[in-house]
Length: 337
Image 1: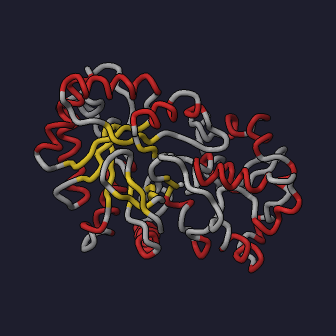
Image 2: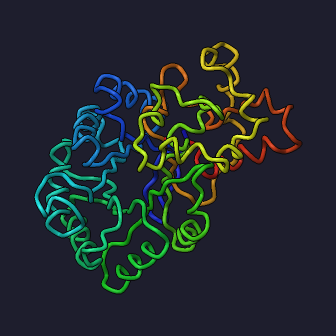
């Protein structure tokens, strides 16, 4: 697996980052540890979790799984969302950040975090307080780098300005949602990241599973799928995913190429997907890319699966150059989950 620098830092990370949001929730510890072991064996070393993922269960699983190989892993986690019922158990105040970091270190079984990310914007706490607390954690040796998740363009630029103005640690990466059905960051966020040298770690590149090939226009989602169980307020809810704009992404000439559910693990399917990533172009300064754990190394289909129901052997049925354009976009935007 190739490695690249995270933003403008000297830190090298595997170009695929293993997202662990489903660990302890949709996937038990045994399955989670198997995924981590396969990821490491494949050459990956960038693992991302958060304190709020199953109220710390994901961090605990990750910590136990990487025991003995901690120094070979670039470990990322996050802070921001509620971890209790108290008024200070949420947000980006100095109190919550420091307490959150200490708790994450205990759950992960480590004495430092490689990349500590604020999970979302906090409109209540002054940026100076948040950045000052994060800077102290870096200077204490508990955190190596700091990053953000789910920031808009203006929020990111304001944070970078406050850091420069006050000599605080600078955010080195951004983790936004990005996929063929969620491309809003292309307008302002990605240009800002390129201009400022901020690494990008996309989450949800399969659109919560919508781009996996198992959904059909006019049909209800499979009962055991993530989208079927998503509440209406979630981004991947069926009412939000099953709209005409998204079906246009999965054009008829593409959805017809997707193998039926019972044939996705056929020899033909495995043969086609095995070589699917070989010719993809590299992204331009976007940093490492992320795929949710359950969508990354599932069964014997790990490492090589395209995030679209499209395979090289089927490219003859597309318009000239269509396959090349699609695979180049995927490699740049969301190669990996």
